[in-house]
Image (cartoon, rainbow, N blue to C red; front, side):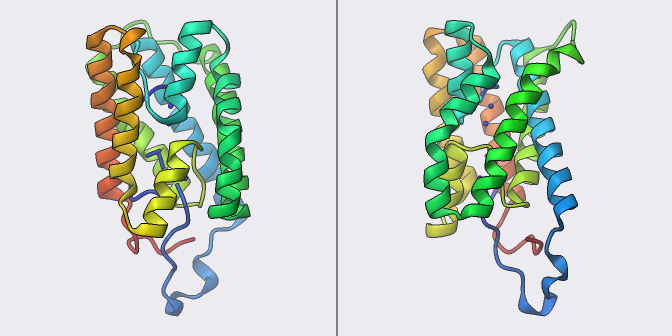
Length: 224
């Protein structure tokens, strides 16, 4: 997933460490394991649904998900396997820059997404889908999924890890970084996908990034 794609201001993008909770709030706001599990599953599920919509409408997404889609279209190999393999090099960066907890949660989220994308067509099929609707609804749905992951210190790997790191380290809003990366990846698809579909894909990337840009601001969310 940009097709069907660690801490955004907005994680998908598509997420990284969150602003520290005020000391007065105490440790009670820390997420428990069950809360993390449901957030990682729900976020990955939302993004997998988006990628299913994009595939049905012939759209693309950004980050490593977008690259995986391009390779899937070009080679016919399973998207899930390609997406999982592309993200492997980014785990080292996440481990050294974002920490073990973030890296492990990201690994789990990526594995879940790869699985859900591959099995999704067995459970849902849409006979007609307007590409404009897919771009807007998919962008918002993917942004929501990435936001869930970001607020529980996880991401969907790839460029999202980089954008979250830049936000945490240098204060550069992750939504802005994600928008630039996603739109660039989608534009690379011009040699595979018709111009009209690329335009809708860029719109989806902008919708998702603006949603994250507005919704995920440092200090707004106290839980961690």
